[in-house]
Length: 485
View 1 (tube, rainbow, N blue to C red):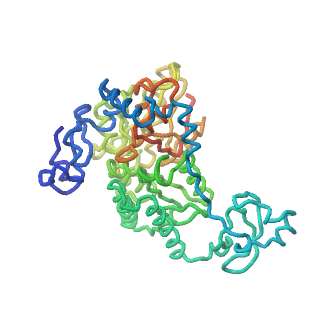
View 2 (view 1 turned 90 degrees about the vertical axis):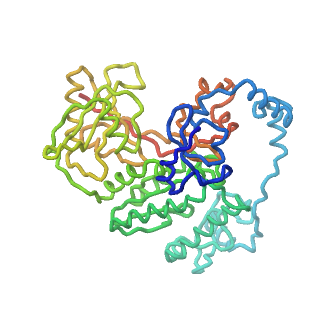
View 3 (view 1 turned 90 degrees about the horizontal axis):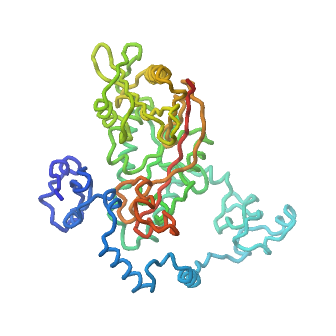
């Protein structure tokens, strides 16, 4: 495995040759499996020769499998601990339940007499974890209010008082809670992969402020969640998600609906939420910056599509353009590609690509895989002109419809709706995998199929992945659109 000195200097600003072999600093190296550049700590480049994706594809050697089974037998007495029902039952019985914080009823600000009058039952008869409503007295204004019994604490305040607190006070409350969570999970300090999380979020906020937009930080949207960045003048919010903190096995686990519910909660308050994952910001920053500029209405240049011409492109030209300007790379072969070229300068400012429908044997449908415009450009009418040209070709080729998808983390799909596409399905959250102890990037879930990993038929895919040290991270879902030709 060779460490790439030039890319390491460009990306991190230091020479890897000056680092000690046991250094924990990141370097850029070339994977022996796929030949692509990847990041890893200097000390991990001594013996390991594959990136995370290639390591997943590579089956375990017989010696490694035997060593794993021997370790499981030594610890638990069976080759696969999670497949033994008796062992799982014993482990469940031996788990020490967490003791909830319970206060005496007279120590809480609950008005039992008023609870009886309003609801017909006594608050004293309810367990501390009850979901029934009780009447309590606000610790700030002293007025009576209603709340679920399990949510009434010593310092309970009504919603009116919480809303009237200053932004600084509410921000300090959120930071204090976050610090409490971090200290509880990592009493001896944060792991190296999480130390740059706050720095990246600060850099993102500074970038938006540099465009002349006012930014609010840590804006609460309900009693438990807050938005990282809010641009109120554009009704846009941005959430920066560190991979270590936002997967299902993190110290504060994020379940399947976490990002989905946050997007919906922001929409109820009139905000369009953009959810950015850490690896996108680290590996595709120019592309992320370009899309954000477009969404926030701060492009560098403005081009009229009527002053451009549509030409068919070869696969290589389309792939290079998409690699340079789209957040997602183009990893599949394309059937056709067209470009939008500015007439006076000859600059390629937009690309659209089509391919055969990937999820069906029905050849009457064709996929619109990428619709992409040059970073920092706003091409007025560009999407309409490119898709109209692609639709004319598809119809002449005998296709009945064009199918495409929009990512809810980034886009609303409004451009497809304006161009005559019908919303077929608003799909729920989907997932990828991340390495739990060193979350450097997301790995497609297809890499963890049982046929690829050798997972036994009676073991669930995500259970086997968790045994290997990988956890799921969920997104906000996708919309499926279809244009009848």
